[in-house]
Amino acid sequence: GTRGAVKYLSALDYEQLGAQIVLGNTYHLMLRPGSEMISRMGGLATFAGWRGLTLTDSGGYQIFSLEPDVDDEGVTFTSTYDGSKHRLTPETAVLTQEQLGADIQMVLDVCPPLPSSEHVVREAMRRTSLWARRARASHRRADQSLFGIVQGGIDERLRRESARDIASVGFDGYGIGGLSVGETRAEMLPALAAALEELPADQPRYLMGVGDPASMIEAIGLGVDQFDCVLQTRLGRHGTALTSTGRLNVKRAEFAESEEPIDASCTCMVCRSHTRGYLRHLFQVGEPTASRLVSLHNLAWTLNLMSRARSAIIGGTFSTLRREVLEVWG
Image (cartoon, rainbow, N blue to C red):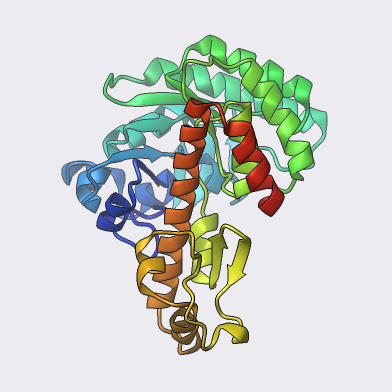
């Protein structure tokens, strides 16, 4: 929920879908309405009416897209809301997320663009390492977990180096950042595998910014535990649904009189109650409910995929599930 809510949805929706954690964007929330105000309101979950867990990123990914002034102490950036100047350091990123009341905080890191030279990637790793240690030292709340973040581009050697270094600091969990930023899946997976080999297997491992079914199922097979992505709701807002047979654009003319649900094998509220023809009609007349309904379906479908993956791991059938998913999405 970038600004405190997932677009078109409410906390009650996430709860009914069975979601366990909702992400908040520190950059946006620290600027509007402000972390101190959210703290006075009881923290992000209470403020949003959410009874589950919250995870907040450090804000770094958004800030680095604004071409900020960066030095070893932190970053200075200009607000996209009102043009005001702000300073974020590893310490203030932790403090801000503490005020937001996040159950899981992410350290401030440097995410290099891809492709980048080894020099640029190593410099990002150096600052990420420096900032990780400062964040760890400033973290005070035992009831709030702090995750370190691994960088290293798509170079397996650099990924291992970064993962070993960040793991040596001793965090409550580990994010793998700087992937799914333009590289192919074939480039991403070896780099991911290299990082995971160096991270503790008994702590959460979080692949940041990845949400397409094929990449998620491959990452789970490598040992990833959690993901975040805007893909499900971004596709939903534009009429594209995730289904057992691949992507489905419900706005297509052929569905004008269709009485089928989005996905006959899906048991979500949308598939139980609405047809492709109805959803296409809503998109055609510009009714925002259409975006809400397909977003709900996409989230339900993805959460179900994660549930199936957990069951398959426990039941020893994950390789079969992986093959089935990749046949459709690979």
